[in-house]
Image (cartoon, rainbow, N blue to C red; front, side, top):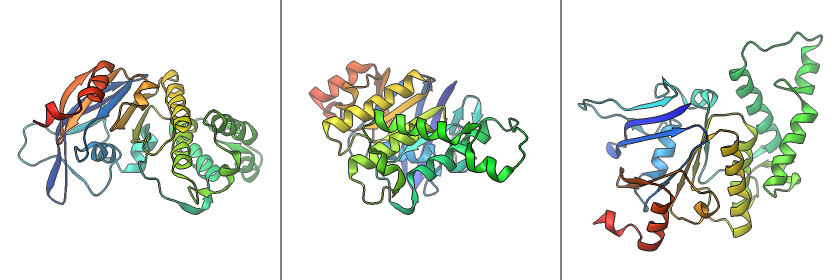
Length: 270
């Protein structure tokens, strides 16, 4: 399976930010997008999931923008439909949602995603109300909770946080770990991480990197958006893209990230 970003142009308030970005991410590959502040990295993440503030495409261009999930163009789809199609986004600055627990979010999201993947796999039950109470998709609720707790342990995330409001009173590192927990629990084919390494201490960075490695082994295609090379020391990417002023100006392997760490972006800015 492939996520193909083709001639992607995006504007906000009449100003074009992305000027024709091309990228192909295959299942199980890890790609990194690096670039200086204001280069369009977070815009790319937002546009992939259909943020309504952005207008995609530019009138008069001969080649149309497209985001293909395998062979299906998901550009016309709403954000929630892109998510159910198999695309996941971890936010750079996740907001707090008091009153909705992390476990309830994971359970509701898992059920929706499972239903999208297995629309015909519904088994007859004697009591649908009890089935809803004791099942999560096709999984017994006990198994689901054990799976969530196992992933939380991998991330060194306290189980107490699972029963608290989403990001409510969480530290910056805890918020990023909760984003990663969602990526590990919810079924999807491609995951986008928008600066998930920002503000993390070394231990949290290692835990989050371990989560990305788990996704890679599962065959999930991963796109890491970052300023720095430090997370890439723990998760070695297959492909590195340099984004400057809304254009992919260079593409290479992991050595390209090491070059940026040593020499910076000066050569591209000039």
